[in-house]
Image (cartoon, rainbow, N blue to C red; front, side, top):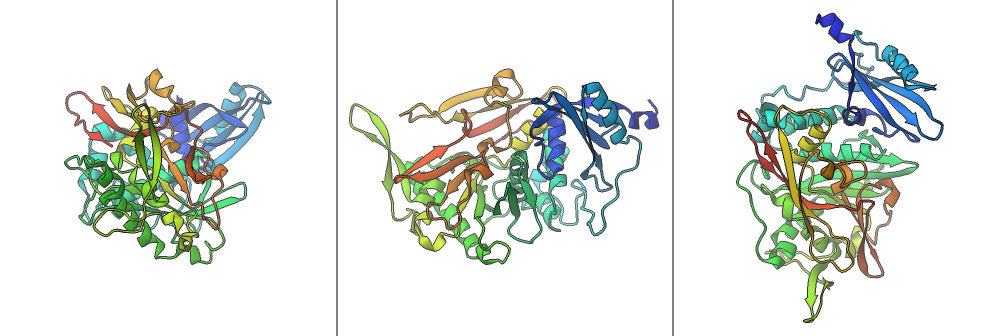
Length: 464
């Protein structure tokens, strides 16, 4: 097919692929009261668009997006309403303007560097795995689209992602995807904090940080590090101290006193990449430190039940005081956001589910789910093929970005974060002296690993 003809060819794409592109919209792929009915792209992807259906009125509308010269998406047209999808597709075909050159940059907009063009600082093994392995092509596509969706990445973003700060920058991309997926407007108008998120008059500032070790490339490719066998060490020892030091280090910067932050909710988003595999098992240490309560199991000989044991200090070598949320001096910290899913495995699954599937590549995700049965003390094991009907059925709309995102609310917060601001997260809060949980998900993954199964010539890898 001649190149000119191919550039004008309109072909259907999956709704999930379009919604990954739509993370670049101000509020992501959220078109209430409409939802995506069908999606298309022109040629090799210089333009795309969606047909939206309003179930209440039975009418259709369209939204067209085109690549800029720096490959970022920009919305170029919205049309409708239409009585039938055929009419909507006719309008969308015109609005996408197949064959036209890329959109120009707006005045004052800096052209962002290419993701895969390695700079003078070289590249890390993690970045090389992302861009050179066919088994991680889905992750490369998802990472690329999230990078292009960032409102205003700083000048060090790409050099950091390509080298020793790969995990930290990947976590920022994960947070952006979570926020936009939930219809939040995300701004990066200031150097810090990293994000301002807003919806329906509610706003919050979020600073992202990762709990790393002191060695370069913490949490990267390497031997898998298992959880401490001693439960007390796992909950109140070195893992908890690592969270404590990282959070306290960020709090010393007094972001809440910045003029644009003052008077608004402020949160720190944290992930643990201190060693390979640590994100799978270290999560329990975080709420233990934040609330100063260790989750124990009491056995009276006839029944086992969960109890909370108050602690005053962590048991690591520094004996850091426990209960950050018990200290009124930190009332300016509204909440701590956490996720163990800001990983290559997550991006690989999301790209795979969006349709980027190298021939022969499959993924098996196994892990544990939170058991919501009253009185249950043990999680539920699962092992499912990503993309299977059984896997998609775990959640009403299949796997999303925010299902592993947790918000730990500070009961002393001067400016609390409304639950409705981040509805897709799992929220932890104190009521009546007890720490409780609220979530919209029937199935919440506590931890998991994703095993890649690929034909000869590929290089499968397991990730957290």
